[in-house]
Structure formats: C-alpha cells, structure tokens
Image (cartoon, rainbow, N blue to C red; front, side, top):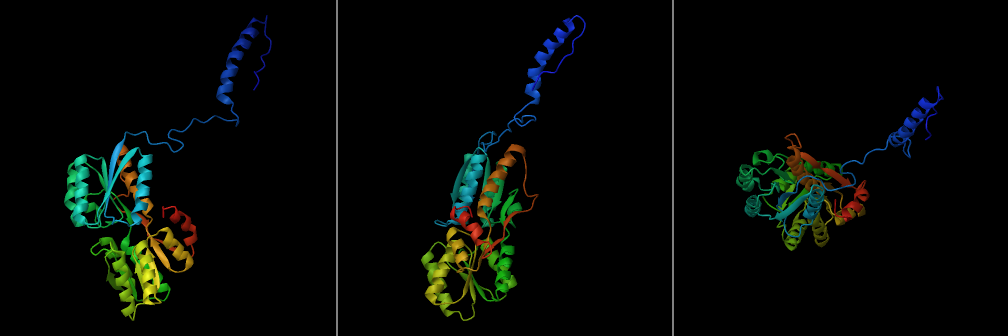
Length: 340
C-alpha cells in the first residue's frame, strides 16, 4: 500500500504539513485496512480451538444402575467424561443395579454438596425420595437412559434417552418385515421399566411375543436358560437380546440348541456391529448411549452457567436408531472405538 499523492499548494508549507499528516495516517490505514487476505483481519474467537470452558469449576455426579461388566455403560461414561472435560467439571461416577443401593449412592453425593446429579431411573419408585432431597438441597437433577415417562415426577428437569416402547415397536415392525411373528424377547433384569417397555413394544406389534427372564449378572445362566428355551420352543422363529453382550450370548445359545431362529438385538458394541455386518444378527435398535452421557452432563453445566433447561419439558430422544445390513459398516469403526 502506497501513500496518497498530495498536490502542491502556495509556498509549499501547507503541502509539507499535509505530507506530514499523510505520513502519520498511512501506517494507521495499513493496520486498519490491509491484511494478507485483502480484508479485515478477524479477531480470534473466544474459546476457539476446543479450550476448556472458562466458567468456574463444578462437580457433577452420575449415578447409574449399571451391572458389573456391562460394557454398555462404558460408552455412556465416555460421553459424560468428554462433556465434563469441556465444561471444566469434575465427574463423579458410581453405579449399582439395585434400586435401594443406587439411591444410597445419590444420597452420598447430596451430602458432598455436588453441583448437579445425572441419574438413571430404571427403578423410579426407589429414587423418588432421594431425588426430593436433592431438590430440597438445591441440587439440579437430570435423568438419562431410563425414565422418560417418570423424570418430571421424579424431579428431574430434563431427560436424555431413547423411547423404549417406540424402540420395541420398531423392532417388532422390522421382524414383521422379515416375515417373523413369534419372537422370544429376553429381559435380563426383571422390573427394569425400560427393558419391560421394549418387550411390551415388540408385543404390541407381534402379539405372539414370548417373554423370557434371565439373570443378567450371570452370563452362564443367561446362556443355559436361553438354550433350554430354544430347545423346547416349537413356535419361536426369532429371539431378541436387549443389550449387545446378551445378544452375543444368545447367538451361542442358538448354536448350542441347534436352532435356526433369527437373532435381533438392542444397543451396540463393536462385536455386535460386526455380527450385523456378517449377517448373524438381523438388526439392532441403537439408543446412542454416548450422546446420553454427553448431553446429560452438558445440560447440567448449561443450567449452572445460565439456568438453561433443555428439552422443553419433553424427553430429548437419542433413539431409536436402526442399524442393519444397510448401514452397519458405517457405524462399525465407531463401535470399535467405543463411542457407539
């Protein structure tokens, strides 16, 4: 950029004054008007580049009903941990599949004075009193994974998860499209409202659906019970697992029983995604648990920083999402990474 030309005037003194003024003005113009791109140089955006939030540190507790060894919950926890890292929050995590003990864990975090609680409501009646105590202590609560029909009554301001009955209906419709009408729906935890709702949804579409209860904390028992059922059932044409590890066990039970039933599933992991790719499992109904963990923690941070409430009083749905032969390869790499 060059200085503007100033024409001569009178005895030249005015000209010299204007030249001096121009000499001072040019650097300012250069700074204000010139850049390597020919336009205004943008200021760096605050928080750009994945930096941690500059809000004050906070503690968020997540209490789930996870059973020991169930890898599904590892995915939820990964999502929660990533949100906490972004939000300048310390994540405290605990779980117990028994409703009363889960409530005790929530009470421990209330006593510690955490800034927010994310909780699953597989047994909502067991959580009612302790969540009231959280509200009385001024601790905001969100629910995730289980409890889409109970979260408001329980005192949570938002819920993140799939609609389990809709997911069951979706599974029933897919089986129906395959010409299958007599599935066995295997529930690994009796009384779990979400699992019961899934099988109820299947049965809504396929009235001949049978319910089989197994002890989800004992895979040997799951295998033997399913094998015995498949050996004696004359009508069943399919079997549905309500979680990826259980479905993989059902595949083994099918082989042990010498059965030719089709196998379908709910939820996801790398092994199950590969089984869908290979054609051993017809489909799985994914609820995208990584999102459940991430959104529940992030919503508590958003509430803490600006009193924001997500969902408008309705559940924020992360599913159902159908994974079958048409798209299983697309999600396989993410399932192998442990985020699907």
